[in-house]
Image 1 (tube, one colour):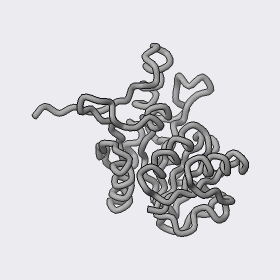
Image 2 (tube, one colour; image 1 turned 90 degrees about the vertical axis):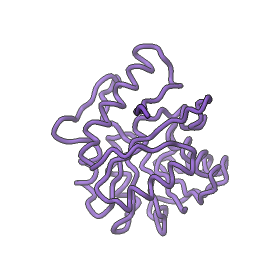
Image 3 (cartoon, helix red, strand yellow; image 1 turned 90 degrees about the horizontal axis):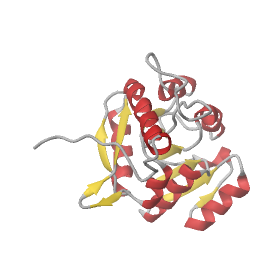
Length: 209
């Protein structure tokens, strides 16, 4: 697929690394053009100015902090119906709490602000370190990403991308269920940093056969 990654921070870098490794055509854009160019060159992707970055892409990965998400997405001027993967979490400054919840979510707020696209929540529960290292945890264990969205075809596209990078996928239902996924990410962050478990952890769901 042709995939645009918005953002050149830890998550953006990990996505570019894994997507190019999986054989996708990747375009990188970000607030810092030089950093985006360096990231693209490192992994054989292509850097582009925001206005040109999303043209013809089948997927846009919104790999920014939540406060920057809407402006960053609007800057690439996505076309009607383009699929956008929202990986953000509405975190407090100390990363130990959420600024939204119960009646809305970061994903829903982004969808309201940019209503012409198909927002799919995914990868918000995956640490950048896990994404960069890969989904295989050994002993047959693979990291899962939860996917929530209101359009079945858009979710299928995101699932295809996730599986191409080696991740398991758990369908978390409609986009409003991001209200559950974002607190789950908060718990993961607490366990990783607050409880000292480190960043080589990831949540999943088990089902007895």
